[in-house]
Image 1 (cartoon, rainbow, N blue to C red):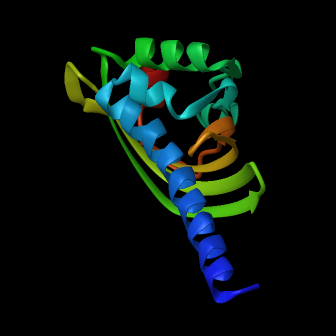
Image 2: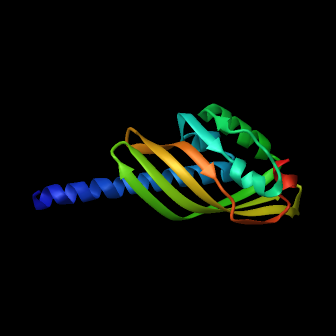
Image 3: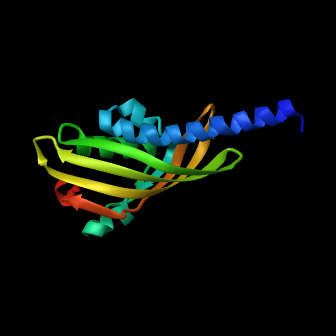
Length: 159
């Protein structure tokens, strides 16, 4: 491989890694801003979001959400006007395989009741993410959210 070809390959991989990380940022910031379009841009049309492992920590049993529209509608309906959120994404690790990728990340998600910020749930969640290429960007096909620890009252936030 020539130096130019090697450089082009390295740049393409770095771009993919940045776009994959951006999908996670769109997921978090879309919720934080209650921005339907930004939030939806994080997902493939056939996406699945599995929050069951995290919710099991406080005894909840939510269903797996299937389909981008269902995920976006369900989460934004649950939070908009009721819950303020901030998501911080870190420790992103990515394995690329052509037009698919697997990523892990650590996400700290703060949830505060809009009417009473003293009622909150702060979650530290490991994410397992399967992504697919969508043109120049990457989108989430499957997201499984675990929970390492939490403080506050998740049942007041999530029901």
